[in-house]
Amino acid sequence: MTWKDLAGRLNQARIDQLARQVVAAAQPSVQLKCGSRIGGMTAHEARGYVRARAARPVREVAGALLDGELANHLQRQVALRALDSVVRAVIARRAESPVKIIMPRYAA
Image (cartoon, rainbow, N blue to C red; front, top):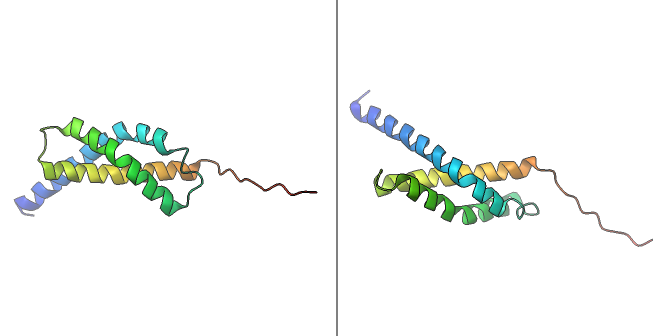
């Protein structure tokens, strides 16, 4: 293993660690913002909706946590990885919640 490989692995581990911190800080606000609205959407619609609504809070949290600590391209990597994790977590929570089935009323 060359020193470049080792540096790359350490860098990826650091990016993963920072992404977990960003996810922990951003997920509750995204869950509150999107949780109730995605119940009636298909999986594809819900994923797109959550991704669009989560982008700004994740970017803001990543910017606040990493301000000046990392280069811009690394901050972008952390934010994108955190965004994917937040979207997966919110969608998984949607799958855990009970599905409300609305039955039409039939006239007798």
